[in-house]
Length: 96
Image (tube, rainbow, N blue to C red):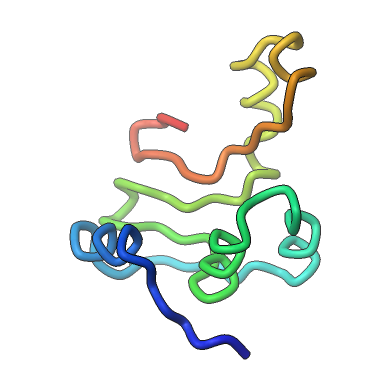
């Protein structure tokens, strides 16, 4: 298994937000579904940290499948036809 090495940006994020205070493991099938669709580094973080919450809900790393309906409402059909879009995080105030 790969060694868990943070990149500079994620290390900075953890300095500001601390370690997650809630985590949910990501299933292998979810990782495989998003492989090639989302960056490998993000999938690596999901594998190591899961979907998780920071600062008692101030920031969340989320399962994109949970936000497909909201994304379809937010983006027009024309935009959705141009590319693939995924929600990967949200704020405690609902900003995706």
